[in-house]
Image (cartoon, rainbow, N blue to C red):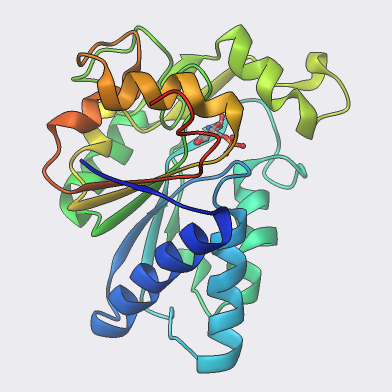
Length: 233
Ligand code: GLP
């Protein structure tokens, strides 16, 4: 794994530059996308670039990591809604080319991923080391599946809802084995709350206690981490 420690703004522009280069070189590129606060600045830079330079997403395909269960698609905090608000509605992507895991057919999503092959996967990381919604204890061989969210994850995500009681208890997520099929992976981590997870990821043994440690087995991963998230290294 390559580790790059620098300021958030710099990280966002480096990550955006990679995506823009990929899409310009391959208009049929397949992107793996994440939600949460970590990729927001990156998505804004993609939007700015699309407005200025007309980078063309009309044939790009995207696969999101995960989706809550029990929220209607038009709920403000559903990940479909999140992606539209924060990226899709502001670039020329065809919504028919944007995919999310569905609770009624998790296996179908893994198959689709297997056939489509993600060129570049963007990841955030949970404070407990989850990637996607693969909570501690998830087997490394896991495919897309339904998950019960860890209490820590519900607490972390409560800031986006009126109260913790409104945070869904379950989600559907790409599995760890699905995630590491991507050709290249970029993980973004900002702030002190991620420091423990980053320490485990970089210095710990691969273990399902910290699902992100599976990334140590992937040949092309870059960790973009700010000084706070790197503070325990
Ligand atoms: C959420 C998402 C993850 C995300 C993580 C970190 O629960 N399911 O895909 O990477 O938590 O979120 P944030 O970037 O807001 O810290």
